[in-house]
Image (cartoon, rainbow, N blue to C red; front, top):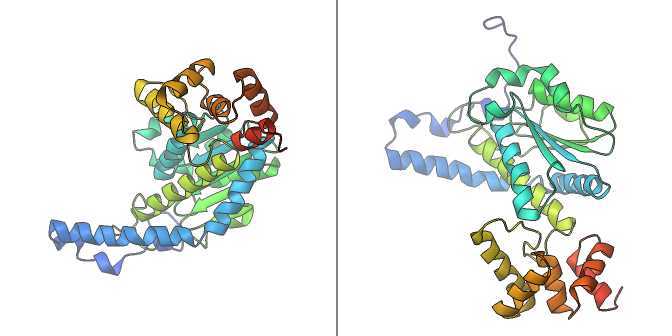
Length: 305
């Protein structure tokens, strides 16, 4: 026992990295090359867990298509990454606020201030998922694979009939046994021992980027690889939206601007009017019948469905 705390087996993220033992004596450029070399291994680690990410995407699509929600739960770096991912889905894909929500241990203050003790608060983890119901999906994140705040939230969520996914950097995490899917890219020891904001944090960012983007694509929140559902809330984004409609349709800028005006700024409707030569009203009807999926709406307008 150390300082009254029972020792637990170290995950690989907490072990010393023999390649960086002389880090404090390296010239700056050599130090940066070492960090960069270690970072290069992260994408390969994530590639090995793509089947688990795919299974998680399917759960998210099922939840959101049925009117339920996706919840992220995390502490420290993991929680901050979760908050970032959830927030970016609103402007990027037009996701309605409250459909994908993030809960960070310590609350909003923990986004900019250290709140390390909050990760041990199991009661707060339970409270974080107070609104979770059967049909929702709860995604917990913990680099070490044993954060009490996250474990408690996942346990309660599962008891309520919600689907559960856990993202860690610890393939041997004890939390894995209480969730439906465990996504565990093994990023190994950090350059700076135990500093999981580095490779483990990068892996979590990659996992959530892939998870949420694939979910949105599967939900029809894009047309081809174009962000037709984005919110054009400033001049830069309105210009981008205009380019998206032009790319999608091949029409000139004047025609695209006019189509967007008639569509009240809905790029999906504008694309349908230009590609299918449909009226704005007919395009809206087709889009609604296709649950917002532009490809399916086009098929309806062209009589192929």
